[in-house]
Length: 91
Image (tube, rainbow, N blue to C red):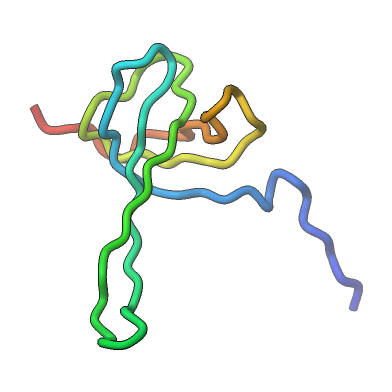
């Protein structure tokens, strides 16, 4: 059986997160939470990290649940792009 190599666009990471800021033009800040186990106490802890993501149509609002994908560097801090909006914020 031949080993198939993944194409470059299939290796990109994707995360689901919540938009926490939309004050910049064509950029949103997305908070991604993940559960990790504490090494000593074995309790599950929620760790979060913020990513700047490209939103070309300025569609995302604060509170939206979005999928972001890794991409080439777009600016000093932007290395992610919004793929789709899973859930709109409740107003």
